[in-house]
Length: 209
Ligand code: PRP
Ligand code: MG
Image (cartoon, rainbow, N blue to C red; front, side, top):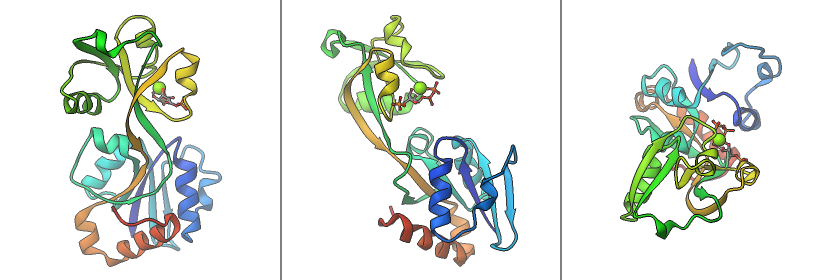
């Protein structure tokens, strides 16, 4: 049996669509209720519905052979899994944003609020800029508005949250998309996993990463 950990929430629908297009019967998702584990005896598959970061954990520990998770999470929490495919869903980007009057050159040491301290630190370090990170759990957009920080580093998808809070993008950092990750031992052990990956690749139509 092959176990696939899927990220609950935003990317769930698009992930299921890709799996269905690859020929898997994903009918169980229609009335899943509060269930978090689904066994498909006919296809010898098991699906786990978990939080993004936990997808990586289940795959790393070999409990899941494969996982679908955003590159934002993979970047922030690197681990010992293999990245197999860019699924081209969950598309968004990391950006630096702030109130329109923000001038990056005003600050010798920028104070940045973010849910993603590693990405933010690496970005400013790569530009040789001094930064102080303030870790925030969510609703990061209010930080520069109420004067907690000079700017934020966060995910921008539609840009609606920025607009609603009167913020503008100053710099884009990197594109974000959902990836298929794999446990390396699983791949060596079970050749059917590569077959499954090939089926998904045929649907998403890009080269393995
Ligand atoms: C995410 C992200 C941005 C917003 C981007 O927040 O942190 O705030 O979505 O989407 P948009 O550009 O389409 O507005 P989320 O809603 O997940 O909440 P949180 O930050 O409070 O966790
Ligand atoms: Mg947010």
